[in-house]
Length: 608
Image (cartoon, rainbow, N blue to C red; front, top):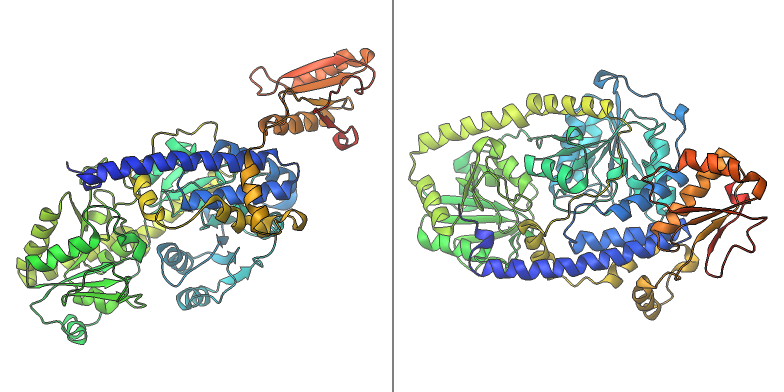
């Protein structure tokens, strides 16, 4: 089957994008190494946040980063610890009565906000919505959904440091039976808040950004994805166990459409017009590949005088669509119902698909046509997967096929088209409507309860060459000016005040210094109390220093008379496959053992 993402000049463009992605991965690694080297947890978290900001706008060709995960997990367990008596775990899904939904921000438009609204309205459980970084008034639709569902809305001030926000989140979470994360992929707060599984409820992530790296694999018990390709990617590329990566269909919004003829008359369209509708923000139709969305639109209207295109998202004058009397850019449209009523077919956005728009159209009985790879195993990161929405989306591999399908739609008998629309709406309602979606939710909640505390840091998720979808995202987002300095600057509010750069020159210097070398031959040196707890703390600290590159191994100093006891304690906690190299030295005190550049652990810090 042809794949238009790879056709003609597109293959060369994607190859160039993959080169850029490899360079971006190296920058991500620089941020992470700098974060791991930090002695101050707050600064380490800020640099980790900068790394995540970077990866959200400059794809690194991976969906999880092991070093980043270990860092956030270690800091979270130390700084936001749990206690066994903090929370009474739910016995089963029926025992889950209070749900905490967590979002970084919500918007007037966009798919993930619609999912939050529909979730809290449909779920019979009592909900709380926590906004981690949203200072503006709630969008009208979100406020209405919260009011209808009796949902309390809680905010944390945006200027609150991440570790404090994580503590606030943890404290609120333990008052609930389930946590559902709708957060941005570059938000590190949940990764810190839920790293320690002790005394917390199960944590479920709604994977609304399945094509991006996100932080917190080690803090999420179950992942809910929109479709099978994202489920598989969570296992292969994020290191999530297969039994913890599950589907949750998008919830369809039942809506009553106005009369078709009245909707058309209001738009100045005749009854014989063949009306296409596209829905998607400007970046989804950016002219990065051949053909461009503008070129597709022009080809369609020139192929048949009946064809009109209504485009919600692109605004008049922004040059994303050609200037043509039968192509109408409408800008942001608050209520799509009149457009859905007037349209004969939804034209999927290109090169980035619009999953929520496709669902809303299908729920209204409006079929869709999408340019993409029609094979069942196609990469589906930015394109709709084959067979989505009960067959509502017809995927074709070329523009001539797309034109032929659109014209054939216009040639169908109106009564036949009406019957097909009703059948499509019914089919979508069975899976994505109240009953089907609620059944899928209950399976997901059951899995979350069963796997509470199963979250773990991935060992080594697969990092293959960047997928075509990731290369497309690079082409789209790469046109936006975004440099490492911008990522660092975004994270500056999370830095301790004394560590914030004073001006642009210092900011540049900080970024340039991310790769400063660790001292050659440095070791961690400690003379711990001979107690199991102190030995455990020493080993944990030593592992962090070794991972950070500040030391090559651990030297344990014990008095000659205590060597045998030290051997027993170390053997009990250091396995054969441990990442840490440990040397035991018999000496009275460590002053003669430590060398310049060594990391010396204070004995007092190892004592409980």
